[in-house]
Length: 485
Image 1: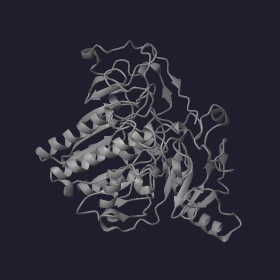
Image 2: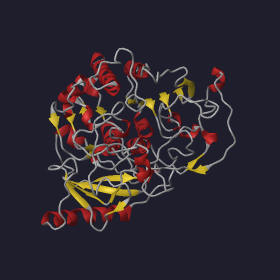
Image 3: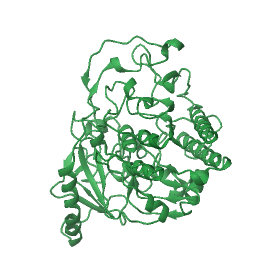
Image 4: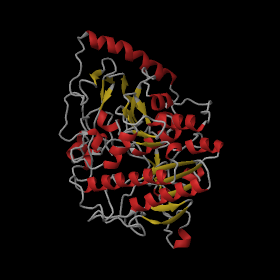
């Protein structure tokens, strides 16, 4: 989902009344970022409070490549990482994930092995349908056992776009909140639907409703669902005791457009890139009676801050044996301050620091959208948005003379500041030591996304026997995964 998909951020169709109301009742954060321009690494960062290059969710197979967890990936979240639900357990929190996990699908990588008490959803994205002799359809789990597969028990009609998955995920979330409230247990719900990811889907009552086509239908259904969740908290009388945060894992995937992708508003390019459109995300914080309603805060913040902030709100001390990249936003949220003014935002692509933002300025040290080969095949991460020298189709290094933009005057990154100006020199003088310190103190984690193997696909997940859904596992033949972009 993109920054520009919300009515409150100016989406012309104005089809997100519940999210817009959530912003009016809470705080809008227009300068909020993900940790990586694609799915798996940003989710790993959210749950560990650490950059993907630290928590292992990157590849060293090639320079500056986006890597994630498709079915053939051997790796997943490392046992050395501490996840948010594991920390919250110390204060008796019950945790559930609903929807897409994406931190590895082999048994040791699944949610219940990593701190979650409950799970309803899938380990991978809902790609498919597949011919199961070559590639299995993705399993849907209830806790630690599969209860079916996408395109089999859990239908997604590729022709019409109809699927009830978001409704199923909504019900799972509402039921969990009700059970924990009745048991008077503190809870953490990680609600991670993926209907806006291609192939986009929505349930029957939302199909055809949006001016924006099928993608808009999916957004309308997510908007409705979030409205239902907030209304449920009110009905149960726990809204003043529940902190809710909405954001997205990466910018809208413009390469799936125009039918299956959203809007990144005024920002450049989209998913897979380290331009603003790939990493700046919609973000709303909601907590009636605690977060002042109708506030807009321009604090630079990111998904890793949610790890640290959640621990602070729950009264749990953060782990002190590791570097955390997330900062505690409680002062920002509760006192509407902008106390963390000097904090940088790091834009990584795989193992490379591509850009850094400090205040209103952003410096690009490497530029690359995707290769000429991919572009010739019609894969375009910046359709209609080529900026000469910036959206390059070869990896270009600018470390000696970074391209610098002022995101206040130029949110679309179209006008680099001239290197001959005093402004450029002043900014470089401020940003350079931040980059040097970061690189000098960075201890990269062991890369988890280097190896692939057909034998590790979802052939025979736990619970398949009961359902008669086990498939024959092929012989193991590992290879180095190929990450084209």
